Length: 460
Image (tube, rainbow, N blue to C red; front, side, top):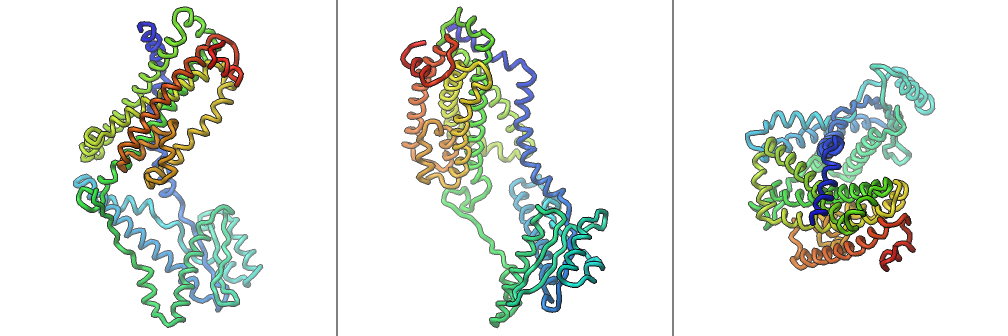
């Protein structure tokens, strides 16, 4: 036992004393925040496109007004959405969020993507068709403060239906085209309804109507579903992703450690003073302590940030983790998941001497590990879907999918049964990986079907 603890301490210290470990530990939450903020920053900093709208003849009369009205309606809807979002934020954090400030911040992030400017005289004076297209092309290649981002040429076809040719400065920019398409579709609907004898004012009121829909559930605290009622679902999904990150990170560290020590002949020195089983156990335990350190650091950072920004939620999260039992399930799934993947990766490392050897084996494994990442979100939305329930019983996927399904209160037989299957499979993996590790550590044979069969048979 003392040798196992010495190996575990050595494995832990080898990584915990490095600057890179602590930098990577802090990098994950920092880049997670940055990753969530970058899309908002891009959206808020995106330049507003300058668009010139031209009607191609008398038959196109009214289409430019329809595009302008659609743009004004979009701005009105954005302001209304910002106001409601600010009110919700004030409800979530009473006394901490100023609705006026929040509405201004949200409005800044949801500003219009385009603005309609005066048509340049050269485009307006050009004859419809190829001449006007050439004029539009010439203005779009110009640069400067008055440069255009797009020119919209409106017309109607033989059936009287609105059409448009949209010239854009960038070939990949579809926002103006999409907006114009939606505006002309709405305009055509109004024209058709008016021709059918429906009052245009009725059509406008119908399009402007936005129903107020509230969600209720018998499981909600006050009947109406609020953010606090969705909190367990968010925590379950976050727990699944964190569990995946911790398990894969720890197992990858173990693989690299074993592979490096074998290539440097350090593993042979260790085998002279400890058995292969003691080395494997010590390494798994040492990296497990390292993973626990990462989890505690991430948990401390998250709890500290939450206590600073949203102190009202600390008690709710504590109740879900402790009284709701989520913490104990998280620990159990983490132990089983880490044990499965750690011994598997350690056995692979024992047969590899170079990163190239490991990459050929890691490719198929990582393809398998993509499956829970793809299905965890589905497990939140449809936890009882037959495919999700079936995958939850697959031991390699059980820790992540069951964690994501936990807030939906799956039947106890599924929780207990899948966990028993996971730990039974983990013990089988320990036995198989132990034999493979011993065979790989004591020989220079690379992993192959023949070498694997020999290891399972007890050979070297």
